[in-house]
Image (cartoon, rainbow, N blue to C red; front, side, top):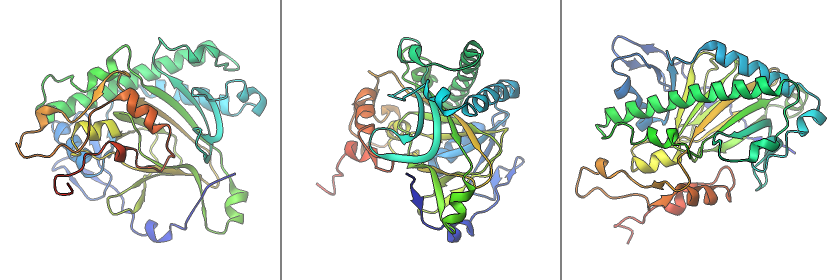
Amino acid sequence: MVVLSQPLVENFSRIKTCKHNTSDHVYTGVIPVIDLLDPEANTLIIKACQEIGFFKLVNHGVPIETITKLESEAVTFFNLSQIEKDKAGPAYPFGYGNKRIGSNGDVGWVEYLLFTTNPELTHQKSITISGNSHLFWALVNEYVSAVRNLGCVVLEKIAEGLRIEPKNVLSRMLRDEKSDSCFRLNHYPPCPELLKALSGRNMIGFGEHTDPQVISVLRSNNTSGLQISLKDGTWLSVPPDPYSFVINVGDSLEVMSNGRFRSVRHRVLADSLKSRVSMIYFGGPPLSEKIAPLSCLMEEPDEEILYNEFTWSEYKKSAYKTRLGDNRLSLFEKKSKAAQ
C-alpha cells in the first residue's frame, strides 16, 4: 500500500536556485545556506529559523569520513535480504520498519532503522544487526556524537543571537544524559515501474509532517526527494547535497520561541531511478523537561503567550497518537484574548 500525491508541476515551476553571497549575506533563493564559520552566522541562523524554519549548514566540522562510513554501513544493511532485515524489527518503537510509519495507519515508500540515543533505555539491546554489528554500532555512536554536538552548537548560536542567558539554555537539553533524542536511517528504494504506471503522479516516500523535538540535523546522499512547505503552502524541492547538513526547527523550539521560529512541514518523494539514504538526528529534551515560551524572550509586557506549558513526555505521547500530517501543536495552543 502506498500514498499518492497530486501532480506538482505547477509547484516545480516556482522553484529557484539558492545562491549565498558571503560578502553581503543576501539570499537570491528561499533556502538559506549558512557557513558556520561566518561571523554573522548567529544572525543568519535566527533569520532562517524565523522565516522558513529550515537551512543548510556548511563548514559544519563533521568529518566526511564519519559520514561516508556510516552511510556505507547503512547501504550494506538495506541491501540485505528481507529476512535478514526483518531480524532487526519490528520498530515498536525502535528497530527496523518497512513502509509502515508509526502505528496510526501512515505508510510510505520507505524502510528505516530507528534508534534511541539514550544509553539508559534498553530497547536497542534486542535489535539484531546482521554482519559486523560491532562496527555498525561503533559508527552509529561516533556519528551521533558528532551531529549532537553540531546541533548544540547551532542552539548555542541561537541563544547568543537572541541574547539568552545562560548560553546553554537550549543545548543543555540535548547534552543531558537523559535526553530523549533519537536517530533514524531512512532508505527510499527507487520505484520506476510504479511511477511510470501512475502517469505523472509522485510516490510519497515519507508523508508531510513536522518534527516534534527541539531540532533536527539531517544529511542525505546525492538523491533528490526532500521538500519543505513554505508559508503560502507551496512545496519547495531541496536540491540534494551530500556535503552540507540540513537543520530544521522542531515543534518544541517553536513553542520555546513563542512562535518566533517556525517548525517547518516537510516530506520526501521517492525517486524513480535512484535510492535515497538519509540520516537524521532528532534532538529531544529529557522526558520530564517542561516546554514553554522562554520568559527571557517575552520582552514586551503585552506579548501574548501562544502555548500552554507541557512536559516533553506529555507532548510525545500526544504526538504519537496522531497521524503524520496532523497539527500536533494545535492541542497546546492558547486561545487568544480576542477570541475569548
